[in-house]
Image (cartoon, rainbow over all chains, first blue to last red; front, side):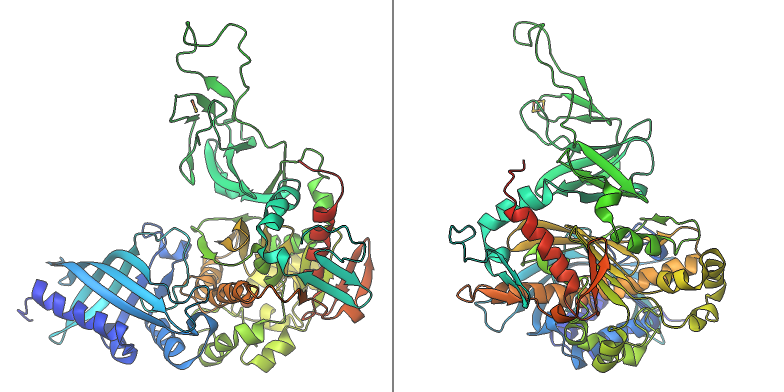
Length: 167
Length: 435
Ligand code: FES
Ligand SMILES: [Fe+2]
């Protein structure tokens, strides 16, 4: 159908753009990076069946939309004040799968801080998350779209703090 | 501050006919914290595990009684043991995994070996002039927590050999446990998913109070009610927050039912469903009709309802989860949410409850992160120690005696919280020195 090669450079363009949209809270545009059935998954136990195990995030398309509406439109204590984030992406590799989709593997470091009265508990401190982020990329009408974003946090089954920002 | 010789000083909890106030120090003072580890945790029943977590011989998990690290293991004869995770030789931890399966626990320092029943089964290089004499006072094994009892698969342990029997201790709280577990046609739950674990920079008692607090929902979770109005069940609520579509709706829904206080400090919110028809005729009607046949209408109203419990000192029941809070210091707490499956119930129903809990209680969810944020905000607020008291007097004028030492009030009042604090105070201020 298409001989578009989705190699490392193309993969970098996609994941850098995603990182920018997340950090700039351009989340309506972020939603358009996914396929219509695109899943956003942050597992606690990536080897357990999804149906038998709670995840940190398991968002099907309507849930992704809900997450964006929640974060952009609705005030809530865990984001009052709001987080600032910075996603650093590296170690990008893109490998074509038998299905015709591409598996893009990256390593990411996410820095997050909530400002406000930085003398107070929980504010004014930079938190660091690290993990592998794997994207399944499907080429739809010549456009590379994310069919699955899977975030494997290094500390996924450990105690978590407030993760109510975009990972 | 924590102790006073003045007779007029009300102490940490100030009670009177129209008074119920708790001193700031009860949440922030490290001296109080050290005392409550001894008197509230180490002298009392504490929830440590559910039997389904260690279902097979050799299975174990680690847990805590206050600050004391323990191993809960099932031996080859299926007997459950609760053991201090400390080699009796020179102190190394003998188990470094959170859960697993083992015939033996081998100490990494000098290789002493313990069976999965805790017995010392091997001492390395025991003989000779560098070893032990023939009359060496050989320890029996890992130090054993003296009392272990289960109620419907929920394992409690106590470092105090003289605690009252568990069923007596649970009292009316067992009624909530029964209603939760009887939602399974065979009366059993199973912990299958890995848990959700969170830490917050605040005192553990905020979580113990809040799980039975009907007052906060329309404020802390106001954003959630907006989300609920918009998405209803489409994003996986599974009917749990039906009718919680605005702060006003929440206040109406959550004032139904009855709050209970009990003599052992458990705080309960019993919220039966008002009308069974939507359940019996809904998508999963067959399941509810089966329960109706087994239990009748009144029990089913409770079973299908939304009751919660704060079981003194460290166990919570809400939604379809066991929740455990673990104090780390006066201002640091770990909360573990174990979603459970109802044994014998359609997979689709268990999956529904699971996705619903993930959406509300997860670290990136729309409920619990707001609660734990508020606990941190509370601890922050209490750094203003120049203010002496917190006020817990809602509904104090309208409490009702329920007999047997229990009492009740309307949800949204603070009966369950007062129940907690009264027991806490009895333990903290009791004259007898407990180990
Ligand atoms: S401390 Fe365990 S064998 Fe020495
Ligand atoms: Fe809450």
